[in-house]
View 1: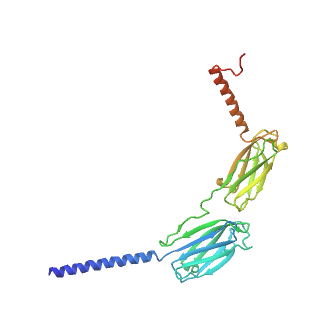
View 2: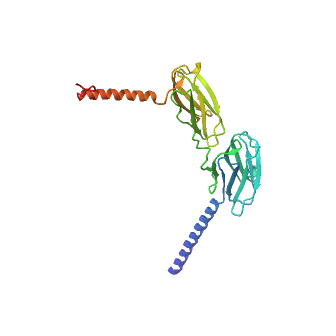
View 3: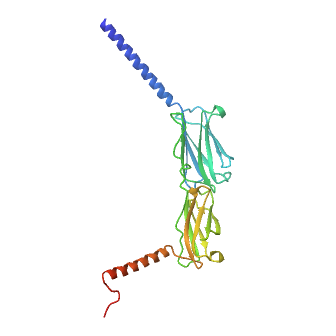
Length: 286
């Protein structure tokens, strides 16, 4: 009797473990049965955008649409994922991509309200060329949308290098960097009293660098003091940078010129003080 009871109990335990294992396997399988990922990559200055991704369902075709910053349709494509759910597509930047800004690439598996998954990524295009891009959107495994690294979400803004010029020059150079090359930069120069002296507009290079030469002189530059140089791109404070340059008698004063004179004056006074304290005479006695 005891043996029979022991055998029965062991059978119940094994059956319970088997059911738990099957439930766990089913849950794991369900967790892996949802989702899609989409990645867009492009080299700076390239006319080609590569889109890759993965989907759990390889039955339904994937439809791509590309829209401009003003929501104009510029490209359409349809592909089928392989047996592992992997897929890839290539988009050429054509003359239809006339706008500068961020183009939206959407991948939809299914049609309309019956679509299984829909993913979107943004790629910046300027002057018919792509910006450096590596952006991924994914909801794999959990079925919950979880955006990953996106070059749009981490802007670095605009920076202004030191304004440079030679002593006594009637011209100075403004240089800087920006991470958005699709928008022109406005340079504004204001006098020490706050009056706008000149306004210039320049376009950044493909690598984000920009430069401008400002001519000094004339009645607008007659006030002595520090003139403010502001580089503005968009209304975001991240895209505003400023620096100052000193003008006297209509020409540029070298950077740190006033500070250097002050340091020299302090040094002379210190030498005199030390000489007096140590009873040393600067002028020799005969």
